[in-house]
Structures are given as structure tokens and as C-alpha cells.
Length: 106
Image (cartoon, rainbow, N blue to C red; front, side, top):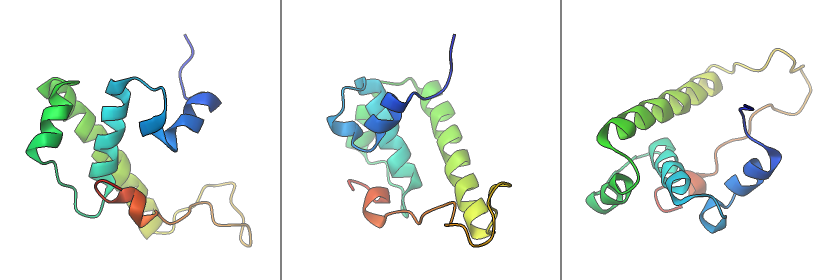
């Protein structure tokens, strides 16, 4: 069994709402977008949509994983931690988050 993202999958992530990804995957990506935003809000309608795809236990696991990864990314950016292979003078290894992409509904 092969694990990891294929180039085809990664290409679909930029506009996942219009992609042919499964609805469950799109729901998880919507949650990731919400939790990574400046002011994460899970309103009753959004929660109902999530519950159509995930159990309470799955939501807790998914939410914990998403917030850890998002928090870790913010941590390394805040402290200026860069990949070992990055060299001074090279283009920055990270780009700033696009505010529209991180806001709920954006």
C-alpha cells in the first residue's frame, strides 16, 4: 500500500470545492480551513454538515490533528524556523497565508 499525496490529489486541493474529491474529504478540508482561520467558528449549520460525514469521535480526532498541524505551522513561522536545506539568500521557504483563504467562507 502506498501512502501520501499524489500530484493529482495535490492539484485538486487548490479548488477542492469544485473538484471530484469525495464529499467526506471536502468536509474535512472545510473544517481545516475553518480551524486555520483567524477566528475559527463552528456554527450549528456547519456542525450539522460535519456530523453527516463524521462521528463525534472522528471529529475530535480530526479537530485535534488539524489544530496541532495548524499550530505547528504558526509556531515555526513565528520563530523563523526554516528547512535544513534552505540557504540564506534563497527565496523564503514559506509564503504568508492568504487572508481570504483562511477566513470562514473564504
